[in-house]
Length: 454
Ligand SMILES: *Cc1c(COP(=O)(O)O)cnc(C)c1O
Image 1: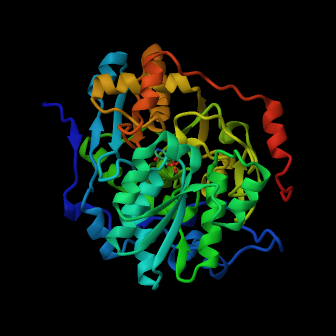
Image 2: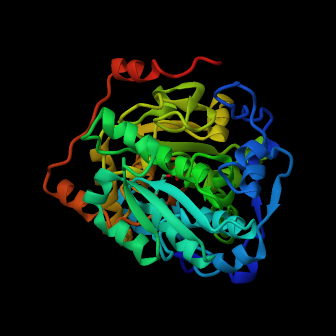
Image 3: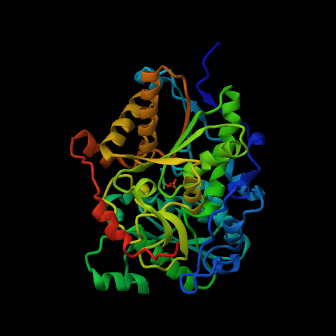
């Protein structure tokens, strides 16, 4: 039989609903809390900053299937389905009996999976009469996706980008501006939060935490303006399940079912998006797939964080979220996988880890670039440094398969390409990259300011 390399769905086979794993979880995620009263938040509370529909989806633990609005389905068709690819050349280079598949989310106008949630978030804002959207962005993938989606639905977008990242990665701010967004380096003098941060530390390089504080403040002080978020929250992972729902059909076309599903982990959206549709079969008892989230060794919230209520941002503006966290003022080392430098994990993921349905592994930076370069030289795609964390874990597992002589079917998410991350590859190829170790004392220190609620 001829070996098939790529598996694609036709437009009429694309998912028409997202999968909401909350409905099937035996232990539901704990509710987000109002930091002042410590009372659970309602959808109305959340709708002060998010669109009403996203606020409802965030707390929905009832409906397992949520309709994808037709207008969003139409926009998904610009780039979906994404290919499921069998990585024959990578398998061969590793001389492994494992079958390795990846879902290629790098093939779309912006180059990462983030667009899958940017489109519905902007659509709902538009539907509800919002004219302006705001957000933060670190490495710039989310800001770029949001800017694109805002232009698709005719909204004005204001993006706070981590100051140091604008300097290091000017191309992503140019993409945002090309799509019509206004880009501000954070911390900035344009918000109360930014001014406070700059007053305390004039040389502050900015972080996701500072940028979130500024964007949330703008959303709450500007009429008709909503905040959007590219990861961490439940509704974002919900939108990303188009990845796993497509992959489920495509694996069927390939005549296989994954023994392992692997994704890199920042806040959990690309991982959850691929994993949750498969995980529902573990929850029902029909399958026993292993679900593995690959995080940077320098930002190890899944493996070394604590499960606690914590703020989503540095200034403490957001609701308290139940999550595995390193502390909201944890300052991760300046690794190149900017999208993975976040102190906490999503609420669903945190509960799933607690319940033993999935687990995390830590990968040092240099190993991720070794993996990324091997992937580029075998499969011809230069992966985002974030995605290379998943690839590194895949390689570890494929090597184990070889040692143990076991054929496992491994599926992973290629969350984005690395074509705008070439200075990182430059450093790696020159031998200038380093690993960052983090001590237990450092983690303990940043956990000091976590409110002790649980
Ligand atoms: C943002 C990003 C991530 C991390 O975010 P998750 O929500 O954990 O998926 C991973 N890969 C790429 C390419 C990204 O842009």
